[in-house]
Length: 282
Image (cartoon, rainbow, N blue to C red):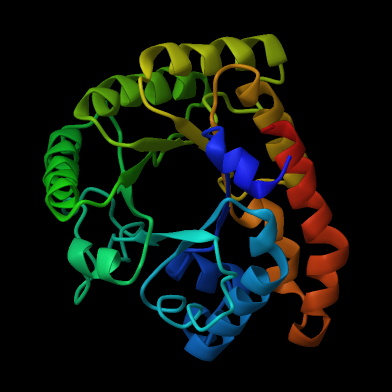
C-alpha cells in the first residue's frame, strides 16, 4: 500500500521531528546548550530527506524546520504538521498553562502551509493544574477553528512514578480531551510495557481508548526502543488505533551518529524500521 493509499484510508504514518529542547538533551546530555542551531537543522534535513517519502506526513516546528526544510527537502505531496507550543515546559510542568511559542501563532502555522497544527499539553488528570491546561487547550482549539486548520493534541503525562496507575491516567485523559473535539489525539501507550508485558492487558487498554475516543488516535513513541514501540503499535493497531507518530524510537541512532555517517544509518537502519511500522498500519 502506498503512502497515498494510507492517507486516503485515514491511516497515519507520521515522522515526528518537531523536537527542540529535548533533542538538545539527547545530542549532548551533559551540555545541551553546546548543540548549535545549525546542527539541529542539519539533522532534521537528513531525516526528512531520507525518510519523508515513506511517511504520510512530518511533524515540524518553527525554529529549526519551518521554513528551513520547506526549500524542497520536504518532498512534494508530503504534508506537515506545525508544532505550536513554547519550550521549557519540562522544567516545571505546573508553572503555567500551555502557551504558544513567542512570535508564532495559529495563523502563522496555517500561512506556512501546514496541513495541521499540533499542541503538546503536559497533563495529569489527577492534578489541580489539569483544569488550566484544559482551558488553555480549548482556547487554542477555538483559534484553530477560526483560522480553519485542524489541531492534533498530545496530552502527555509527567512525573508518573507508579507504573500501575498509567492505564487509568491515560484513560482519564482521553475522557477529558475526547469530548473537547480535537481532530486527532496523539497518545502514549496506555500500559508500561516494562512493568506489565501482558499483551492481553495491552490490547484491553488500547481497545478502551478506542471505545472512549470518537476521533482518530495515534501512538507516540516516547523515546523508548524501536523493538518495544513496534510491539506496542502492533497491539494498538489491532485495537482501533489509527496509526503512528514516531520520533526518537525510530531515528535515535541516526541522531547520535557522526554527521558523515548519518545518511548511511538512515538508509540501512532507520528506513527499514519505518517500512516495518508502515506494514502495521495498512
